[in-house]
Amino acid sequence: MIMNRMNKGLLYFVLLIASCLILFPLLYTLSSSFMTNGESATYPPRMLPSHLNWDNYMNVIQTIPVMRFIGNSFIVSTLIMIGQIVTASTAAYAFAFLRFPGKTFLFALFLATMMIPWEVIMIPNYLTIKNWNLLDSYTGLIIPFVASAFGTFLLRQSFLQLPGELFEAARIDGCGHIRIFLSLVLPLSTPAIATLGVYSFLNHWNMYLWPLLITNKEEMRTVQIGISMLQFEEMTSWNLVLAGVVTVLIPSLLLLVLGLKPLVRGITAGALKG
Image (tube, helix red, strand yellow):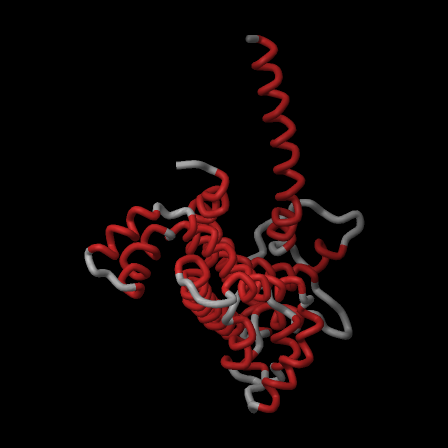
């Protein structure tokens, strides 16, 4: 009994240390965002500010249109998330329940696209968007990411775990594929869909290279590009930069907190029986 308590206490201690190491960059960023210019430039670095300097956040808002950048990122990430849920769920239903020639080959070909690095298709995507005159537009930021092979695979695996008796009963009652999809499959697969939604939103909220490539107008910049505008050639006020980082982190952290439970449920659903 004593050994079990010691082992449990040791485990909690190790987990506490690991948690502190993981949270340290975030806590240091938050602390530095309240420092003055002098405090952020001292060596060795200070861990805590002498007082809470809220002026840094006001300076961020006055220096760059950060709320515009947040709005752009929110619009782009939300529409991509919705697009991926729609396309992935419909494709996953087809691969899971419909019968058509070459289904296995098409699904394998679909999954093979996950092995292609983004850098390989970035230039063809850019040339396509440019030829369609979609530079500096929400459409150009969104279209290349509306379909997701990973999302299709995730939802297909979730759909295959649904009890077949439900579908047999629904067909006996005269339900077609559309009604089965809307009334049975989607409601029963909420954890997996929520997982895909949270993953997609966070992934594209942090997108940097594609918005940098196709946007030139300041009003179309996203948050990741906008934060880099706080670094100047003459000098860099790291307290100002980190205040901007904290500002753009808030929406994604709120979504992660709200979506953590369905995210964990969706990830662990395939590993549990019943």
